[in-house]
Image 1: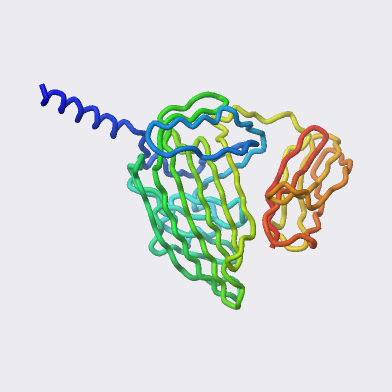
Image 2: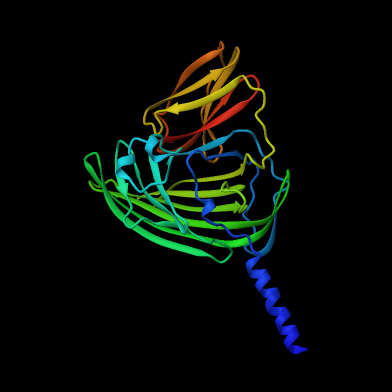
Length: 339
C-alpha cells in the first residue's frame, strides 16, 4: 500500500511540474507581428510570485491610447547587411530610426544589436533573452559590454540582464479570467559611458510580462524605468499596458485620428503633427512624468486635414515628458524626450 501511495505522489508531482504553462520557440517574434496595447489608468502593483497565483486586476481602468510595436523582416530595414543572422527586426518607439535586430532559433532568442544613423552596436556574444522551453523557475542571465563610435565620441555600453519565470496562475482582467498564464520578470541595468567628460547615463528597468503560451503577444505588461545621469536620479517612468487582444477597448469615434512628434528626442523645439477628420479646437499641453503641466497650450481652431504645432522646450530640463493633444471630443498623448 505504501508503494501505491508513493507512486501516486510521484505521478501527481510529475503532472504538477509538467502541467505548468511553458513557452516554446513559437514565442519568438516574427516579421509582420504587431504588438498593440492600451494603457491602464490605475496604479497597481505586480502582485505575488509563486505557483497558482491569482492576479486580480479586474478593477483597473483601461483607456484607448494605443501603443503599437511592429516587427519586420530585417531586409526591410536600412542596416540589414550589418546583421546577416537576424531573423526579425524592430524599430524603437523611444528612438525613431533606431532598429533592433534579433535572432530566433528553436532553443533561444538572441539580441544581436542595434543601429541608427548615429551608431551601430553588435553584441558579441549576443545576449540570450529567452531559452526554450521557458517555464516557472526558468532563469536566464547575461552580461554584455562593447564600444561604438557616436559622432566624435566613443560610447562604452554595458548591460546586465535577467529573465525569470517567477510565477504562474490566473490573470483576472475586467474582460474576464485567463488561466495558465506564465509571468516573466525581466530586470536590466544599461549603462552608457561617453568619452569627453559627458558622464555615465544609466537606465534601471524592471518589467513583468503575463504570457499565455498560446500567443506570442504578452497579455499584459508592467514596466518601471529609472534614469540616472552621473549617478543622480533624473526621472522615473512607469507604464501598465494591456494587449489589444484582451483589453476589450475599441477605438472611439474621434476627430483626432493620429499624432506624432519630430524631432524626438528634441532640444529647444519640437513639432507635433496631427490629423483631424473635421473642424475641431485643439489644445497642446506638456506634462512631466509626475503629472505636472509644464507647458500650457491655448485652444486653437483647425479645419479638417493635417496640421502641426510647435512646442517650445527652452525652459524644460532634460528628461521625459508627455504631450497631450485635446480636441473637442477626446485627448491623446505622445511621449517626448528632451535632451
